[in-house]
Image (tube, rainbow over all chains, first blue to last red; front, side, top):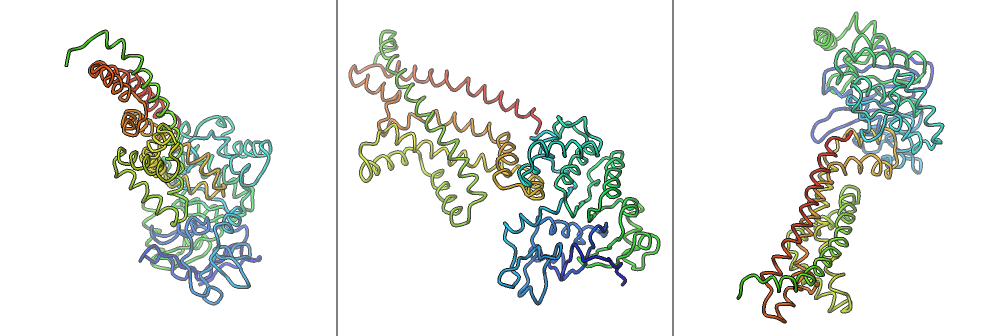
Length: 271
Length: 222
């Protein structure tokens, strides 16, 4: 299988990563690389491990440790440094919470259920972490927040509470909130799945803008195949925790090679 | 025993009122303990390492499953025997009552914390918020909305249990009626009636206020 080459060092590298939930092995020695600025869409049936990959990168889940990671892998690397693990005395050890907290600052995530803080107004949702995680001044954080809320078309909603907004508007606030942290990597986890159909276009429009105007590396889990085709450089088809097939969106969508990919796409497009 | 006497009632009223004042003071001190300690316990049960969490949960379980009267008597006698006989019944009684109810309020807080969608924690993690911000501005405000009414109900229940501390000599209303009876061989009917009415007069408005608060919180933004 041909993997499109990238001309820089990978920003994300999964090296034989395992993830189990109890007896269920979701990822079994998964390896792949993603170049800086790449937009990669992960597709596949539910339970295939796509969301787990994003959650591992956001440190919402931790990799299942492997004995002797220096030899056997089981490690996620980000920006050339171990991410799920940390180096101590020349050896890799499972990362501490403190290490993870510091490393994940360059990773942002937008969730299926938006997960805005309901007790904070829109503006505060976007400034809170800028001030308390990145230690920006309140003025700087607010001006950045207003700029981003303008970008997502919600500059008139800064003083509203999330529950006064539609789902699509909430998701756009969530996108602004993630972007305010200046992430190098943005994870999009089925960001339109919880939205009414008429609200999907606005959210995807905002994400297209972000893709066009920034060089943020994006990992996208979606069932919106049109969006995947427009935005991504590469599509990876997953099934049962392994990559079945990967290629450019044009190739995957018009000429999938694997039966499982063909079946999956037929099922999704029939929806 | 004779029937109701207005004369006795008017004589005993100031004494019962004084006892009622003591009840209010105990409620205030124990209430602060129950509200504050309960919260500390609830947070510790979520965040502390297992060697703190397990004994703490065990202790709370123990407190909830033994009678307040036994706890009050036990602490009263052991502190006066082994620690300091000078400690007042008011102080010891307030602390025991506060601790006893902290074991209940902590459960209400816990329920409030557990009712918060996991997505809130995940968003806080994704934004790398420091733990004190996650708790202080994300979790606790949302927990408060869910727990306030339940905690207020525990405080009302606690208020009604203050007379238990009569057993260790806190000079609340029953003690006052008892004293009057000892002197005059009368006054039980009048004294307990007045005590009951005072309890009702105090707890009814609080119960109504709690219900209003509950309704207002239900209409809030989150």
